[in-house]
Image 1 (cartoon, helix red, strand yellow):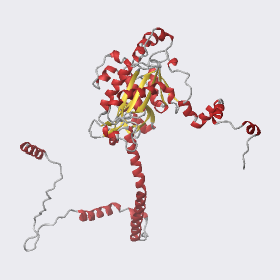
Image 2 (cartoon, rainbow, N blue to C red):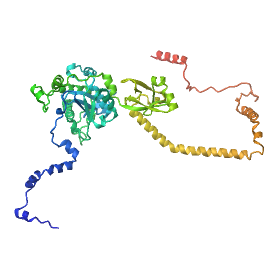
Image 3 (tube, rainbow, N blue to C red):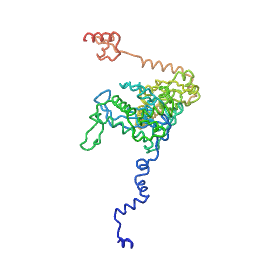
Image 4 (cartoon, rainbow, N blue to C red):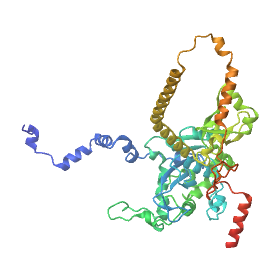
Length: 496
């Protein structure tokens, strides 16, 4: 098929590419085409215009915190053995939207998950002087004056959405907001902090991943690791203290009051000004209470065997005193609310419906002793492996049951054959002598079951009234007595 130009194009000539590009640029649909080509969610996250500002949505410090996590680009060593590489840590950061102050951190190996977020949120209410001292850094309260809960938490749906965060909201009236899926730009303030913090320690930390990682001929930065998790946490603390007290935010959008007072856009200065002029005294709660309120909650089942949670059984003094397990056996099971720490399920905490903020500690029973010192994930894995092993065993068990049935049928058939036809006498005459028949059978069994020992024979071949047994072997596996234990201890002391 031959393509021919239109008459007007043939007369005026073909447009150049620059002319075509100009007229395409004048068409508003070009951006819409780009949006559809990239996918709307990617375009909205990375390429859309930025007209709003997060600061305009808050009135002062503590109005809203943002929380997010990243996997740090540095490999660490184990504290147990410096020869073992444990991979990259998870870094959680909680930031105040108004002042940009970093109010909480968590450096660990949990997550990104609710457990990691729980640790970071607990750190927002922690005494930072004691927290820094635990990592060998002495500070004054003015250097990191953040130990308060906010009015609103904004985080990711995977970590902040669900029943885990409900207790915190109920106890402290904290509103929890979640960003939409694939919309990290809704937490743009904290996303910027993940670029600023590594920039401070990147040049000095061995094991930090550079751009040539995993490229052909590139360096394997895992082998350069020298820091453990405590040392890396100390570095993050130093970076946070620098950022909070000295870093000036060049693009901070001030309102008229801030601009009028000529406040520098340094987080600590913005925090102090906001406390004095906007928020006033923030809400402070006992650290232990905040930590407990961050624990996940669930409904456990009261059964005759104990309070069951995740297949593990617990008991408590209250349950025993009130005969919960007797009642469950006689009247049926029921549900009770509990809190738990998924990292260690040795104990769970029973909520008291009659007294607010009161909890009863429940301890694992001996029935579940196989799960001692295990985390929730280890217990789930153990149960899954047990189910798999049981499922793999089922075919052989079914074959064994079939073989058992066959053997029993053979024995019964042989017994029926030996019994022959029943005698033609009345039932009364057959059953009246059962006691005498039993006594005769018992006497016969006694003669067959009695222990008889072989005695030694004399030289003439006659039996002698002497029983002689062969001594047992020297390998004695019985438990040692106290005399033997003391003898071995004295032997060790003499050798020492």
